[in-house]
Image (cartoon, rainbow, N blue to C red; front, top):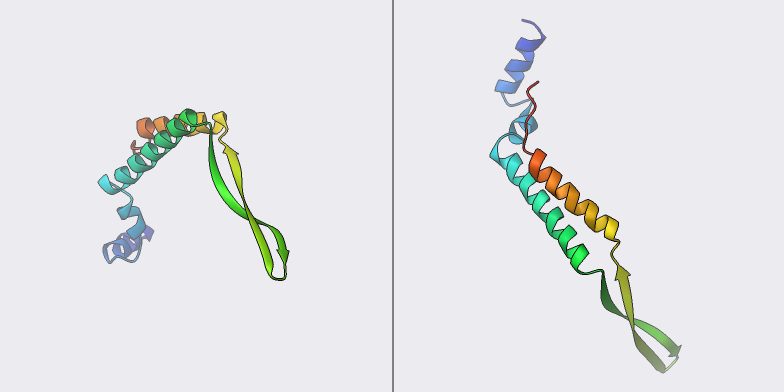
Length: 103
């Protein structure tokens, strides 16, 4: 019995290739499709909203019995190149992600 026979026997008994079998078929396509849709949605959101704002509490004065906090507004810019890159990657994954290679 050659190497192929041993590998086929291990695979049939579930010792080898369990991960390879799980990544084929509709389950793998579902994951690829979900990732592509998330990338496309993130890219569109990044292009539609150039930045977002959040509020952070900062302690200004902290002297024994006195504590003064201030709310500071922070802005986070979303680079357009990142949004376009996510959009292009999502579209490419959607178009070419479910193709299988026959080896």
